[in-house]
Length: 223
Picture 1 (cartoon, rainbow, N blue to C red):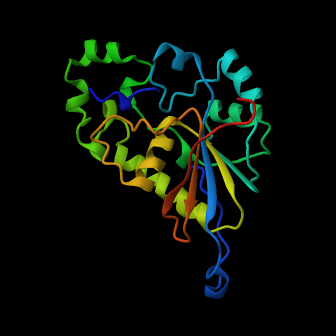
Picture 2 (picture 1 turned 90 degrees about the vertical axis):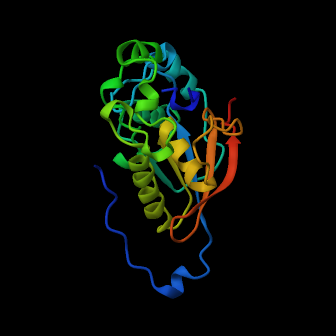
Picture 3 (picture 1 turned 120 degrees about the vertical axis):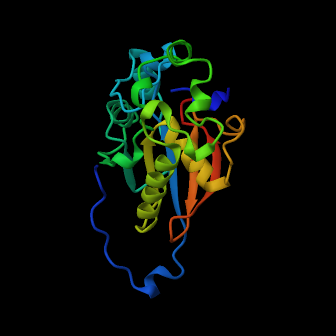
């Protein structure tokens, strides 16, 4: 079983039309993506998905002790409580909440552990859900990985249209999606060891929102 399946609308406003002259020569936008802090369900190995779980006391304390190691002019966050609390704990300015940054919807499997799913739905539960089929994987009747990738790609395209670097407080699935879009990882193998989702993933976005890896595993200040 691929272990990477584990760990765990608000739309942006209208964008001003840019002239071709203004767009040409504009440097790429940097976007720092980070995962929310720990929750009690993380500690128990329970899938959260769209279930609105708060940070644990330990998670709040951990994130409050950290700071972002770079300057940004825009802050975005998933509207889910654990992401909002993380943004606050990090001392970030009031973010723009965007539902495209929400975790993948795991349907009826939310709240369950891996062992509970296998007991309930059989040892081949993940194979039947498409765990060996990359973007076709649809957990427990929830959202497919392809649908997650599409909304993350849409978010990246919108962020690339404005000036100034940005940060987005999101979820494990969103970081994996961004990494996949930037590298072309086929998702048929376990999550690449080079991607540490407890740290910051920095993307460089072209004018059309196409992402490239700017920096992997950037440490928070205070670690």
